[in-house]
Length: 292
Image (cartoon, rainbow, N blue to C red; front, side, top):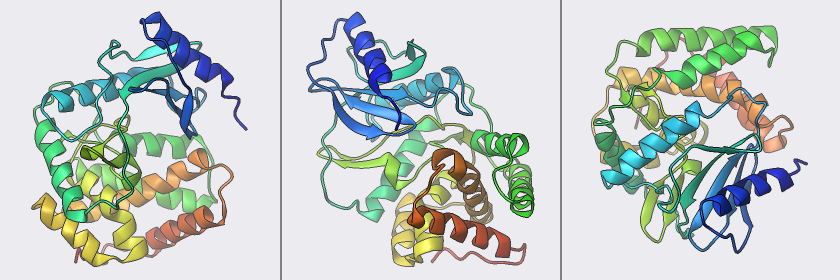
């Protein structure tokens, strides 16, 4: 178990230094990132994996910048907390940022609303002027596979090949600021509607990357084509060839990060990982991925 006492101290002391006295410490998430509710309205996100692939606070700065931009444009996102400087903050060696607390509701998100809110975010991000790294999660994943042995040799090479090809193919499509990790875990159904969160993977790439990310599980693992169609119809037109490549790239990225994010996966996670590997291994240039 990770000792969370020090990251909790880092968050609370940073809040106190900015004139906010925490009156609670509710743990909302405890993983590579620790999420704490410190007051009625204040939530802290503390990076616990300080020795992981991402070092420093540059990526946190990008997250803060894109979140501020989207909030100013009225996009459906959870905003940074207005009572502290946006940061990113760093204390006791832990990168930290602070967010507005929102109340989650239990209802499943409507797929049409998922597509609509993602389109709203993309429309707002077209105006984002801060330079972002191109295809960052793909190049980052490729670098991880080059630096670390995470899979058997053949699987490791297959993942490198898919990522190398995807970077080449996707570099030729129009790029803009993206969420970068647009899956259901980063979308909250709240009393204020569907709100996107967790922008730490933001990068510059084709819009089809985020669409592929939100539909991947439903399209490939669950084969819930009605759910996928509702999202895609609400989102609007995309380039089908780019989307096809992004589905492949997304599978390779998720696979590459699995041993880092889940070093001791349970049986369900192991099964999902194997299904992604099997899907990538059977994919060929002639395969058609139809978006129903």
